[in-house]
Image 1 (cartoon, one colour):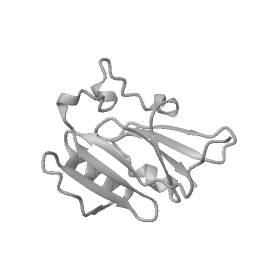
Image 2: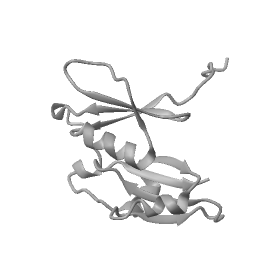
Image 3: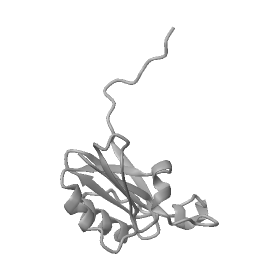
Image 4: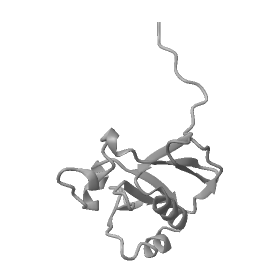
Amino acid sequence: MAAAVAQGVSLNHISRESSDIRRLADFYKETFGFEEIESPDFGEFKVIWLNLPSAFSMHLIERDPSYKLPEGPWSATSPVADPSHLPRGHHICFSVSNFESFVQTLKGIQTFQRSLPNGKVKQIFFFDPDGNGLEVASQ
């Protein structure tokens, strides 16, 4: 008997833990156009919920240093801040219709660019302020 497969699946949200959720929220709002939405009050820790209209939500959660979870490459014992490693590493990818002009907005951010082998999709990789890997791809 085959196992049941989930029905009606869609991406609900991605969460990112941060010691500075305001800085991270501002980055995602300014870089990708996320909108801040109503966030619940959990009392013992702060959250900022963001929404990218017609896409998905991102929940930014105040980091609890006692949990000792890795925060991103910057928290590694020997961090490697090289975006050329991201194509094979953990990252979130956003697709944009204005790839070339978007790339111009990343001045001052270390990036790595390439295309898919067939040349049809351009890609740029970089890190957010907490060291989380990001990719932006052309549509």
